[in-house]
Image: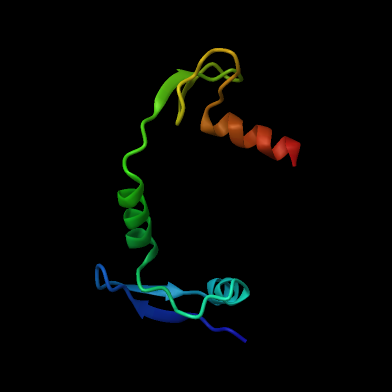
Length: 93
């Protein structure tokens, strides 16, 4: 039903592929317009609108490595590095 389309980013002018899967997702959400920007430009635009996110450093409760988190650790709950956090989420699923 859907086929990959090559589109031109209105921000950077580069070509990007609007995949059949992405088109199916857009249709399921009721979106009628195709994306105007490539993924890199969409991400940059989102991050610019959101502002810079402050990251805090702590120690991972699982492996003891440095863990960067988007909130200030208070010590009352464990924090995890990205790798350990992903493993814990997989185990809970």
